Image (tube, rainbow, N blue to C red; front, side, top):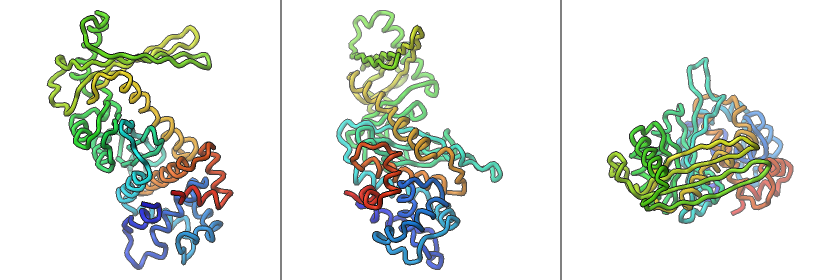
Length: 369
């Protein structure tokens, strides 16, 4: 489905008498402006006033451009779930997920979206990231980080995950989440920490005992990778076994087939640091595949969260009213996906500048199939 059709399908919460500016025009304006470097309502309105003729090439904008106050009012009242559903539907219509692609699930807090005066906490967005496509697939807002457990199933339900590998950090290591991923036809690699104390202890004990005996008599698979550069060397090792007999009631974890230990050893000059992490997976004892999934998971931090913070200045945004912070995040993710789909090799920052200066390039970003 094309962008305009998806925006037109978002249900408008306003009564008919308050629709001087159609919702699809407001949404298109926000996404185009953000893709062109705007960071708030005032900048979005200014972009619209300067590019009204260009915008009218795609939608009527019969009443011109709404004020910044009008933009903020409408976006604060637009139900965030409806807009998030539209984003997920559009992204999955343009992204072609291949079998085995890693879909990373992780959360990010919009740090300045809290409002102490009204006693509201900062919005926490849980997003899904397609590692090979380098696109955000969807996001769901929660009131706080601890609610990721309830947000993740809602986000998964928005996504077509068949034959993908879903990776989630320890917060998402829940039996119901594993069951939902399995039911949607996907595999999972879930980090295990102290929030699952019995499971974590059993896995740590297993690998400590096996390592002490150099894995003698244990059917396992392992791999090792080394990265070096800029005076630093990192060695990553992964060991996977399908022996689940020591786990506490493993049948409660739907589809579980293996447990894994991933060790990262970092050398910086004479300093050496080590970190060991543990996972459960519905994949078999394929160390290379699980190691790649673990490594691909961090793409959501480097290529989504970091870009939103640094390039789109999300953490500096003081938008706080009702649904506005979550809806503005969805606009940013729309803009980021559109810019990433444009095939030139320029950085996102440079693409935003080019979109601000060049009407033809902006049209290519927004509407190229």
